[in-house]
Amino acid sequence: MKLKELSSYLDTAVPLSFQEDYDNAGLQVGSPNAEITSALLTIDVTEEVIDEAITRGCDVIVSHHPLIFKGIKSLSGKTYIERIIHTAIKKDIAIYSSHTNLDIFWQSVSRKMSEKLGLEDTTVLSPSEHALLKLVTYIPVSHFEEVRNKVFEAGAGVVGNYDKCGFSVPGTGSFRANENANPFVGEKGKLHFENEIRFETILFAYSKQKVTDALLKTHPYEEVAYDFYSLENNNSGIGLGCVGTLQNELSEEEFLKTVSSVFDARGVRYSNLTGKKIRKVALCGGSGAFLLNRAIRNGSDAFVTADIKYHDFFNTENKILMLDIGHYESEKFSTEILKDLIIKKFPKFAVRFSETNTNPINYL
Image 1 (cartoon, helix red, strand yellow):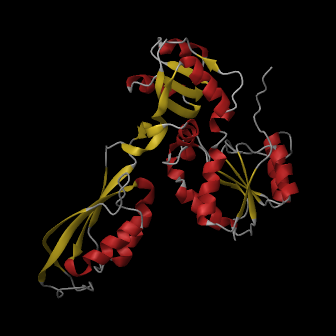
Image 2 (cartoon, helix red, strand yellow):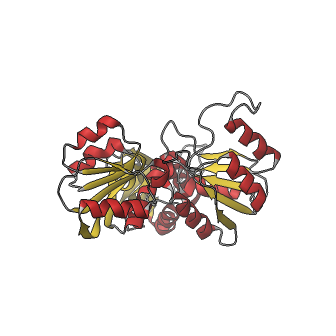
Image 3 (cartoon, rainbow, N blue to C red):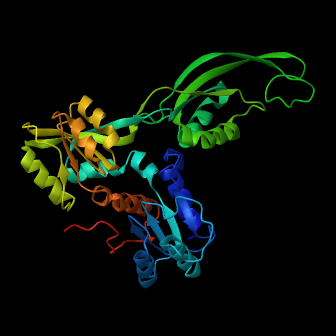
């Protein structure tokens, strides 16, 4: 298949609009029209990973961390990034990354962490704000079912574990077509009244264009009346971090050993022991210390993340056990999310996990 099929799918499956402003997720290297046969999944793109892709015959690398964050002013090979780009272009290897958008969406890195720990009743720790829109439109009774279904098919109407959610109420619409109009109903120059249904539903902001296209393509009117409203609601299904409960409570010492084993985390740093049992656990893949207060407020007994600064450990104030398991260790299972997504859409496409350990940090 062509590279653009894979990249376009991932752009929407893990919406690029979810990424942070500083991020650079998406297709980074490669021609969209290039033919691809297999993908290599990795946390980071390194020179060793490029060599592995060449050896294993993979023509696209899908990574969690982007190779390119800032502008490239030259390709002289003076940095590892420039060397990788040069080799990738020369060997026709594409590079695609799914970073903070993978941290935020519903099958997030943090949820994968909770899955590995066996947490139950998992919810988002810090739900995303301003991610939802409300669509309001007016549809003639004769076309209501068709238009509504097409809007739902385009991605609107999803609320948590429910889909095709909407509200409708009958009413009467009025309009008068001028001489330049081509009205679906009514006559030019005459005021017309039509039995219509006011329909409203919600959607993710990233799907606005797709939903709009579906509405305009299906609605019979020449001029379609519709409005989008930005909602202040937090979206409980997407956001940063997550929180869940262990099946059985553990002592702090037992919990530390369990986390170290599950994530193969050597040199775990942790705050002072609180003396409490561990049952409710908050997690955030990558640099998540900024979510400490949220973890404390929701009553978590422990918070697992990475890249914790020295003074952050004081902020626990003996209310919670905080663990720094390492950035790589906390995100190492993100490639499993990417594999599941790709295989679900392209079951015959070859997807391989990289065998290269890209963790730049060593432990004595």
